[in-house]
Image 1 (cartoon, helix red, strand yellow):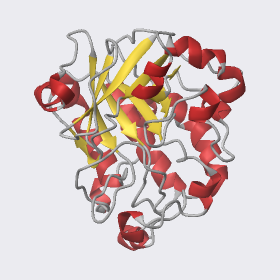
Image 2 (cartoon, rainbow, N blue to C red):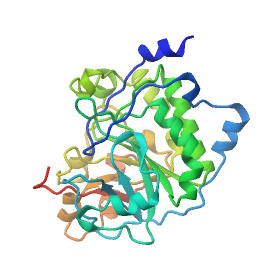
Image 3 (tube, rainbow, N blue to C red):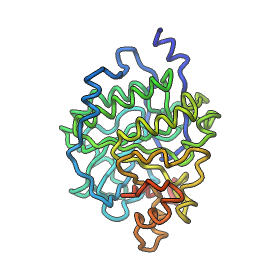
Image 4 (tube, helix red, strand yellow):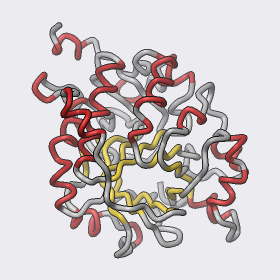
Length: 322
């Protein structure tokens, strides 16, 4: 078949907005840029391992670039995620990560593992934060360089998808990107928005106002999403559901994380580590209680009996600056 024609008809899966985002990218790609599985080479990649060890319980932190609503870290992060929200892998150097992603003058602890990011929340107008074939291809080509430059991992913020002709197209590209990261010794993190895996987003096209109305359902609907949970999610080192929408919610774990509209978190039980993303205001509302203990106390009823929370990631929104 003609891949260019397929792209013109490709599904665009859109989830709800998670992090504030500000970056431009491109959707669509040429045939030569499309990452695909390659027989035994692909199998070898999936057998690779990441030498960096995660400290658990872990504390992650989203460090936003020049975004006024990002506040300083809470506690001492063991994972520092430099976040823009873009179809393009950004940043590509640890120097930029350490110096350019420093809300309120904060710098990553010397012991923190540095992650770069690809993908983001649904943006308005021409701003593009989708996971795209070209973006995943760049992860494949840059993984060894990222490791050599001092990065320990890559965060995949899967809130919007664009440019994939089918679920198989997306699945193969994602597997190959994650496999190359693993083979290069990079940790991988997958995060999804609070309502991003809901039945509405999967079947009804998500938010029609974003990306100039170019929103369509997840390719294949709920059946293929269950397949994604079973076949792709276990390849990631960390799965991080975003337990917020605006970032300011407080309350019980059920209040901040549920409902998700028909997709069970139990399907994510294959992830090596389960670190929910939570708002800074929620962490502060615990009055010193351990967030991991709090999340685990309700894990069985909210996430699934086979899921143990081994860390959390903080999106610390400054409420008077939007």
